[in-house]
Image (cartoon, rainbow, N blue to C red; front, side):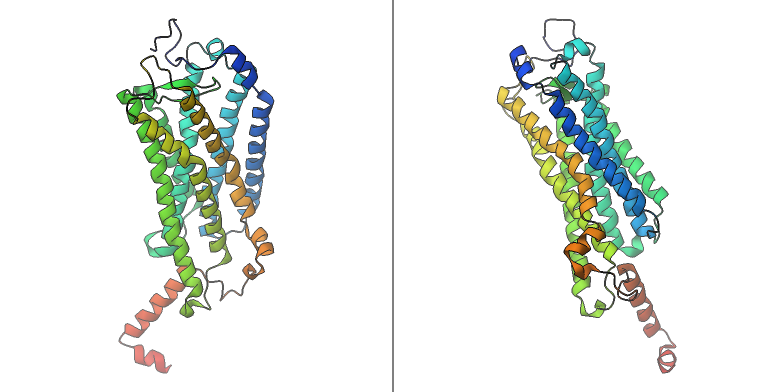
Length: 359
């Protein structure tokens, strides 16, 4: 327990804020408006996704399932965390009066880690699925069912939840953060705090880096197929380009929004001498930086749905008319091209190749 001189829970530590500062900073209407914009964006994306799932191919249906899981995660994250933050703005950040036993703080800490890591892990999962589908079509099922995709989404959620529960099991601590409207992992120098902070930042950073590498290879493969003379009449479907455009947008947004916070967490817990003093107090500049980086990361939940809404074929065709529908032969997928080439090679290598040619 922090030396706070009272019988309050262990989530309270000294913060650099006065009652006058709280009254000046508190803005429940701004916080509520911010959350409502994010919720409306995700609801719109869910409605568009619901309409796009009808009549889609197996590959695209699987990808849309991952997208639905991502948008649903962002929606629930904004809904749960936004409700807590707005209520604390109304209470003038007096968390001690609302939650003296730290039960709400622990819950919000778990929620923050869960809804923070889940989009990053889902982005890496989607990048892996597209990488295998484009560059290794025979190493995955030809028709990955939406049920299998939902099982993968559930597995990602389970991993993120397991990590978020670690502080409740003794690895790290959740504490109230400046200005008193939210709870998050502690940027302290103790082994548990340092280990959990590094685990969170490294797992999130590796997810972003993996997404970048896999998406780069996948896009390079698509470009090669588009410009390959042998495949000039058998280019990828427009849906392949659409999925990669959406995935690249999601990756760029996640990198811009999350990498500053992840790097700041790792840098702070590894700082020598430690940024946090023995009393649990962080420098005012560090607290403000953490708040700014968190607000930037929150934009990821608002911008994610727009990556799907804006990079749909209906929108891209208006910007690039060349993406119009092609004849079926010219819209063959990369998997179909690979199958055709493999069958041709087998026919040529077979003992009756000459007779087949004569016929």
